[in-house]
Length: 249
Image (cartoon, rainbow, N blue to C red; front, side):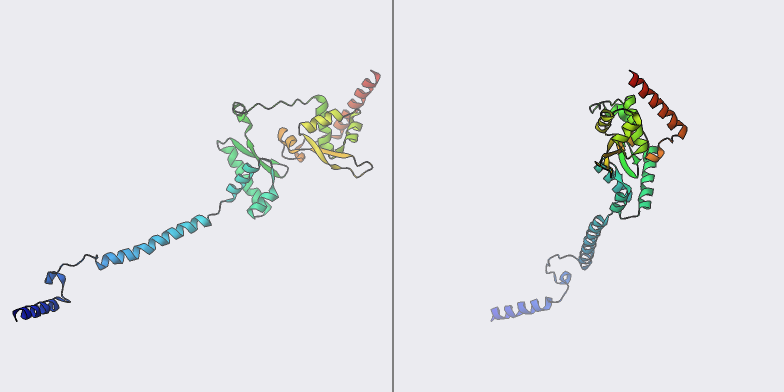
């Protein structure tokens, strides 16, 4: 009987402690954290994920500016790039692309940079500044100097002012064979074939190159010095006199 009475008392004691505050009952409870702490965890975790997603989207949506695009194109291509191709790459008008390039050209000249952008007959090219030449040849092989003799300069002048022109026309003006001079100018990349004349035999037509513009410091053929009719007549007389002297010899 004593055993049964004791069991009933224990059962009643357990029932009395249910639903009561652990501090008043003295029954130890597991520490699961407060409601406020759980609230912070649930509230902060989504914010962190949102920040990561936003950062990823910002990185993916970053679009380089037009100057960065043009700089990358000119640096990579090496040769000159026509304005219309730059505009096409940027998906803007030619006028807008030209304005961006002109702004870059001015800034490159004003700032302490080793490169510059030059214009070559409607195209643009990135190249080193000529005042840095002496530093470049310390680490690179010195290019072979191209000597332009009077004959080469004379032939080149005819091509520059009368292009596109055939070899026959050049020889008619000079009065002598110009094959050697023409071949040398082609070798120096100052002159190139630009087509064929629509005439019997379809002779080759020659014109100047971008190398010619760059070496002579002009942006286009329009910047070449204008020759007055009197100068042309004077040169012709000199050529005729030189031809007469050669024939007599």
